[in-house]
Length: 451
Image (cartoon, rainbow, N blue to C red; front, side, top):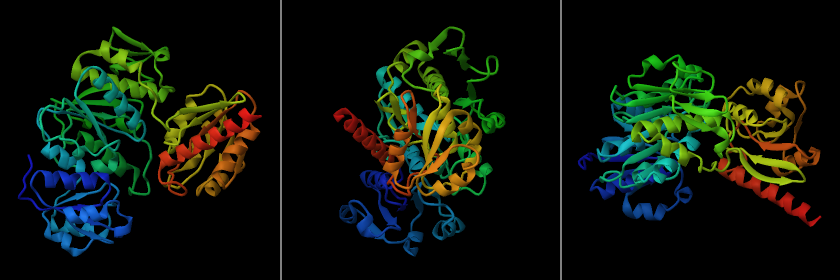
């Protein structure tokens, strides 16, 4: 329920902040907008100034005049203005929390978090629900912001949310009907003081759930399995390694098994790799819990296509296959990617550092790769780790790195972009990095077609 008497300040004018501002205005309230970037770097700044009172180029003391702050997930919570707001007792919430506060009570929420696999899982759930005839929206850390939809109006059956740890850090009353925690591996160590703090952040997804709600968890992730007793909701568990009675969904030879009767051969899925079979288990358990129509859900899952930049097949040139896994921005994602192939690969790695221990990849790289090609800001750091352990080469230029991997290859080889790093050293985001990779690969393909 929206209270238009509350005065709101919005910190950070990316898509979620702007969506929240316009939702507040639409509902009859007022919002004050603040961003640390200068006006010329804010998209649609002129339009925003017409519709709201704004400040650009820094967060000023005027913010302290407002009763509640909606804080962008990209803003670190240790900056001075946030610390002062906490000391003054100003409520700080995420756009997700605000959307939950105003949403119509008839809409059920399916919320998904985890270090890896979130986008694939929420997209698969949305694909299944849509094809089953439900009015379902997909929002959060993927696609459009939650408050860009008419969530305050009745008629939306399901709200499917991809949630980052940053979004969960500032929830208060948010309570999903069904929450999924896919996995927890070290990530964003540049933002959190410790791995335990990151784990605690992920577990906030269950914070307000009761036994009337459902939690879907992966038993193969040790930090989750060890803390499952902390969850108050009804548990549905899945695993690639365990079998009943420990879990409700498991891998039965080459099929996903849910309960006694339902079996989905993994060859019928277009998703590749054991990590994606786990994602499919999570999605199917969730949809079945809310719709009680597992047969239809399994049939629809077969038609789901992999998302771009996630083990995405790009092309085959002279018998050499290229895969774009630009979304692999941490070490655990790289492990999953390498596990998806039966033959050794030539892997392209490197980018901007998020504070991870890349040496954790040494055993699987030794086992699964022909050669490692290193580029970007972390290339020197990675090379020092692996120069005496496995074939590795540093190539600064991104295109030359891809071309060198191709020149070294023979028919039957696989070239995999799976960076284990963020992309901000050279690219706007992982999507741009993946698109550039595909453009370069397609250029190579055209060159060899001419020959």
